[in-house]
Length: 419
Length: 161
Image (tube, rainbow over all chains, first blue to last red):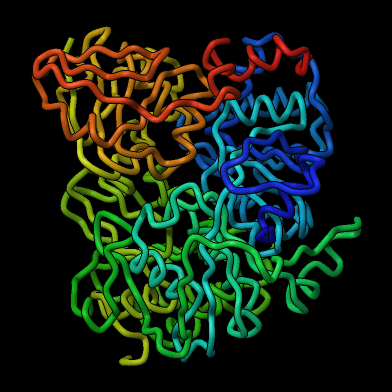
C-alpha cells in the first residue's frame, strides 16, 4: 500500500520498510527543540528521573524566545535554568538574547531543519518545518526530556488529508489567507491526529515564507503536522544553510488520504479570523470597519522578511491611525538586519509604529503588547483564544501582515486594496 | 466527588493562562487552573473530582503545564469526546488518566456521581446507572501509564541514562 510523505519519513526514522496509519512507532530524532517556557519543565523532569546525559549535544536546540528579554524575575529564573542546563551539557544550538530569534523562524534560517528529517519541539508551532519537507511536530516537556536523553520519540503514524492547491495568489493575498481559509473550511479539529499534506501545481507559486506560515498554523486545525513537497524553491532556500545530506521524500501515487480538499489560490480573498477560534473566519470584505486599538505584526507565523516587506509596503508614507498602537516584531536578528538594510524599519518608525527586538511576547499575552479590558487587536499571530493576549474581555482578530498594516492605518479592519 | 463539565475546544490557554507559566510548580499551576473560563474552579475542586469536556479538549499550546495543572488540582481523570493530540500525549507522558468517550460525555451531567474502572476503560454514571466503554489505550501506552509516565517507562527499559 502506498505511503504519504509523512508516513515515508516516519518509516525511515523507525527503521521500517512500511508503516500504516494508526501504527505506533518509535522514531529516531534529528532535532529536539525547547524554549524558555517548556525547557525548564523538561529540565525538572530530566533531573527528577536522574538522567545524566543527552543523546547528542548537536541535535538539541534551546531558544530563549518567549519571555525574553526577560519580562519579570520569575521568567529570568527560568531562563537562568535553561542557561545552566545548556552549559552543563554543552548544547551546541543554544540561543540567548543577542543571537536568539523566534524559534520557528530561527531554526530553518540557521539550517537546523532539512527535508526528510524528524523534529520534535516542546512548542506547538514546531509543525512549521514541514514547509521544508520535514516531519516536525509539537510535543510537551516530558517528550522533550525523553528526546534529549534517548534521541527517540513515540508516534502514532497519522493518516492524512490531501490539500491540492491550484492557481496563484492575487494581490494582497498571502500564505496567512490560505491557512486561515483552510482552517475555516475544515475547523479547529478538522485535521485532528492527521497530517495536512499540500500538493498541486499551486505549490510552485508559493514563496517559502508563505509555506512556513501555512505549515505553522497546521496545529490550529488540530493537525499533527503540515508538509509541502520539496521543489526548486525549497532547494534554493536550503542552499548555504544546510550542508549535510538529506532526503526529499515524495508521497506515493497510491498513498491513502482520509479526505481531499481543493483550494484555487486565485479565488482567495484576504481572510481574517474573529474571536475566539482561528476557524471563525470571514473575508476582509465581511469584516471591514471593525475598530481596533492595537496591531501586532510579527510572531513565528508572520515575522519573516516577506511579511515585513508586505506590511512596510502599506505603511510606507502613511501614518498609523490616532488611538492605534502598532507593534512590529522581526522574528530573528537576521530578519531585523535585512529589514533595516531594506529601509523597512525606517518605514515602520516613520509611520508611527514601534519595532521590537525578536520575542514571542504579545502573541501569548506575555509582554510587549498586552491588551486591556475590552480592547480589540488585529494580529498576525496564530491564536485568538479567550484571554490569549490580555484579560478575558480582550479580543483578537487574526490576519495577514498586509491586512494588519492596512488596519493600522485606518484604525479598523481594512482591505489593503482599498487604501 | 464532583463533575466539572465544559464544552468543545477547551484550550490550554484557558486551562492555564500564559501569564502563570513563569511559575511552573504544581502549587501555582493548581491555583490558577481553568481561571479564564471557570474562576471558581481552583478553589472549589477537590481530590477525586472528574473533569468532562467536549471535542478537541486541550487544543492550542503544547504547554505540559496544562495537564500538570489539572492533575495538581487532584482531578482523578478527564473524560472528553476527543483530545487535541499534544494534550493527549502530554497526559499519557506524565501518567495522568484521560478517557476518550463521546457517549459518556453526553451521558454525564454536572452533579452526577461517576466511577471509572481504568483497567477496563468502563465509565459508570452511578446516578443514572448508565455504563460507557471508553476507547482502549494501545498496549504501548498502557505500559507508559503503568510505569507512571514516559521517563519512568524508558528508565525501566534501560533506554535512558
